[in-house]
Length: 185
Image (cartoon, rainbow, N blue to C red; front, side, top):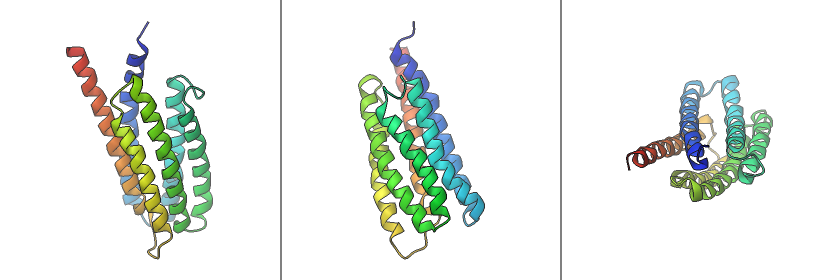
């Protein structure tokens, strides 16, 4: 029977790489389609929907939604956000940025909680903890920008996704290095 921490580590490395790749692709698409209403709206809905799906799958792999309450709540928050973005897109980009800001705060705090819990048995979670904290701060910034006079675009959200990609990639690499060190110890 496999050690539970090994199984989790084996899952988290490709999971974090997949999250990083998705975010990098999302940022590239945001830059490419900036100013094009249809593709931009789709990208804005896809981002929180992907987060909901990713948290759902990760929680199920790691003991289920009951055992991962912060991820279960993140699934709900991200799903509601995707629906709220659909409504907000039809209103204004100011509304979209406000929705993303609230989501960044909530999902960031939930990710911070998940990272802290995983630290106990997994280690190498400091990038996820930093990412969660930075997400919450970025959410406040997005909300303040949504109240400003400068017209927001998808490019106001792209740095948030870019930093997410960085932290997921850093976490994946950190776990690869930790596994390599452990195997050679």
